[in-house]
Length: 123
Image (cartoon, rainbow, N blue to C red; front, side, top):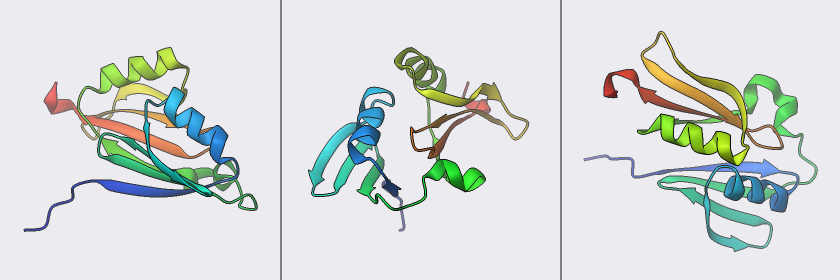
């Protein structure tokens, strides 16, 4: 039977070190490992591969195409409070949506955007 165990997202970034620090310090990720030009990070089963691409257009310049992940989670109020305390860049405040999700969004220094959501029915 098919089952998704985790997701891994590949992000092209101009500054791997700065972006890695943001993921670690502001978003609570941990380092899985590093190889030349790459940083492999995790937050539970949410994995990110940061690739050094100095000539790429920063995600912030792609506007709506800068979204790269929607994370379905539990305990959204807890992680939102944690991110607020850490100083993460919240571009969309935590709120209940008409489609039955409680959501908020964060952005990285280069403009990659992540949405976090929890089913309202789980409260």
